[in-house]
Length: 440
Image (cartoon, rainbow, N blue to C red; front, side, top):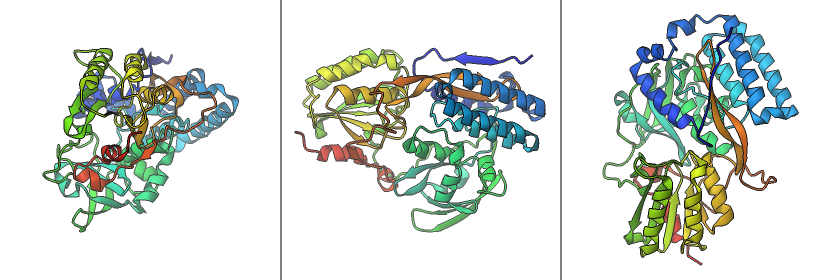
């Protein structure tokens, strides 16, 4: 009898992956001991039989059919059923890595950012990861972190990976990206570029553990290197790809806090850094919002700026005090209230942006949000009984906007795509654009 273990999230509109990723990263550092503790022992899962893989596929398919709102529609259900049958037929000829990737591709086919497999954070996956982290800037794909052995690659622009130019490699990885829209795709595919097994399966590289790259260093020098991918992932250096004396932008000063604020007198700006829709360690989000807005009202600031570029969600039932405070604020007028959005603005943070768009005079700056105004959410978790693979999936359709609103995202009024040139010197061009925008 299959022992199906599933957990249904109790926090509304939480992007459960935020917390699960953090726990999994710690588990990866601890290695096999933690995997054994969690019941994910490598040896057991590497010996999983074809029958057990098919049982896992049946559990996954039945769960998604029963719980995911999109699969209640006949057209989507028919396509999903065909994909399940195709994968089931191919399992006998697949390696373990191909089976894991096949499950991930099936899940990503729902095109729902909340519905995903943790290819980079689930200890049961056992994919090899390159010792780099990259970001898709407007001026190229650049290395923003590395391990100590490859620190000369920091800031380098990736030109080729495996046998493909980097843009072509990105296109080949699309089937494994669980994104609501193209903005979120640019965030998620960056991590897929670092997974050796996916690079091999997509035909980008010949092996999963040794990957050839070609990059252009910041001084223009060409770097050609064979990178070793490892499981668990190699620890990364704390160094960032920034100039030696570059200032830290306001947006990066309190990344470990869900909500922080500052009165920037020199700019006549009151800045709110809103990184997660959750309560703080010692104050609730309602208390933090009331305190921040009261201080903003007393300040000499002429602009109130709320940065949600790195806010990928939380509990949307906590949003009301902040929204009501903004509606009542003296800043609620064109040219005085700004919200900076980006590719990581997701889930409950998109609920915030959607409601602010409807009820305030805020101007939006930056990149499009990582989800549409109306989107799937309310994440639940499924652990497949034999492989131990974790699948997150949506259980509700969140309709904050008009039911006829089919926009793929909330687009900024002032579009400011991030560039590496600005990142390197600590320049926040979104804030610069706000300061140049004349109030009405």
